[in-house]
Length: 110
Image (cartoon, rainbow, N blue to C red; front, side):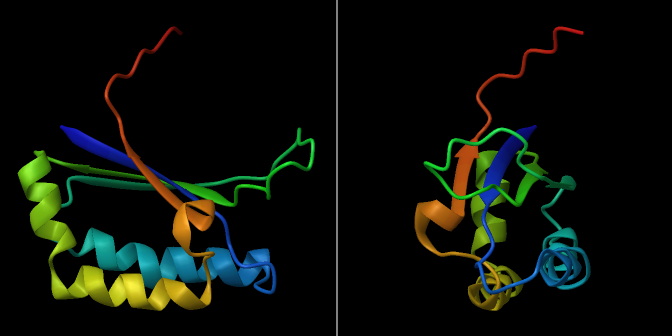
C-alpha cells in the first residue's frame, strides 16, 4: 500500500467547529469518492505542548492507494481539483498549512 500523510493547519479566522465540519462532510468525501482511494482517515488534533514557534496543527489526514501510480491518477481527477479549490477557504496554503509526505516506513512498537 502507498500512503500519504498530510499535516493541515486551518486559517485562524475559521473556527475549529467549522473546519472539522468542512473536513468531515465536504472535503473528506471527495477523497473517499475517488476510485483509487483504498483508505482515508482524518485525525483531529489539539496541541498540548507548544513553544509558540509554529502554529498548532489542526488535523492529519492519512490516505492510501495501491501504488504511487494510482495516487498520481487520483491527483489528476476533476474531483481532486475541486477539493483543492474548496480548501482555499479553510486551510492555510503552502507547506505551512498543507504539508504532505509519503510514508516510507512504519514501525509499530506496541
